[in-house]
Image 1 (tube, helix red, strand yellow):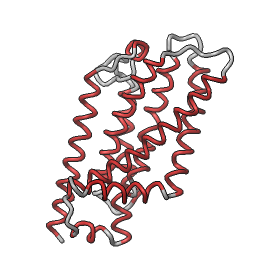
Image 2 (image 1 turned 45 degrees about the vertical axis):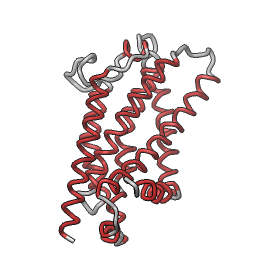
Image 3 (image 1 turned 90 degrees about the horizontal axis):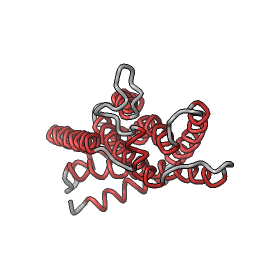
Image 4 (image 1 turned 60 degrees about the vertical axis):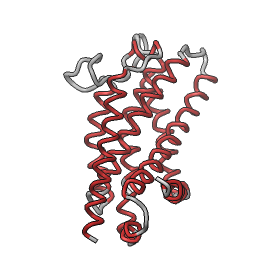
Length: 239
């Protein structure tokens, strides 16, 4: 992985210089804030905690963010004609995939951080002061980041399958959106404390991170990145 830092720097700078990336981050932060306020009003009088509601809002909106963050990765390379140049360079397929994934995950991390800044501003200025657990927030954010990694890897894999950004975004959004409903315990017919629910009220309130969804997200991310590397390797052989 000796060329990974160079490739990652290339991808990250290209993404961070894009107005689309910053617009996407701003819209995501605003949407999470608005949806959180709606969730707080609707959950009044229930046992839902602030940290659970906030994490659930992030989980529900993140699939769209990850889909849009990854939809331009390989299609842009094809349209600009730089993909063939990249594949003939002395870099491995794994390094290319890892750099694409890391840059997109960095953008997702920035989006979550921007949303968290708005959340902190809310809890510091709201009257009466809301009660929440910092340990619970940390555990919930860890779960959110793990899901973001899985969905970003899914988007990188989908980006290799089409030249059209809209197709890539839709291909990522459908399975990631279904997974987000399961993770938030909101899927119809699924028990809220089920296997895939990473954001149960009890776990988040205690600051506990269930190992089962953690392993699931790590396995999903690893599989998608492995499959993306093999797809890129197959394309290299066709050149």
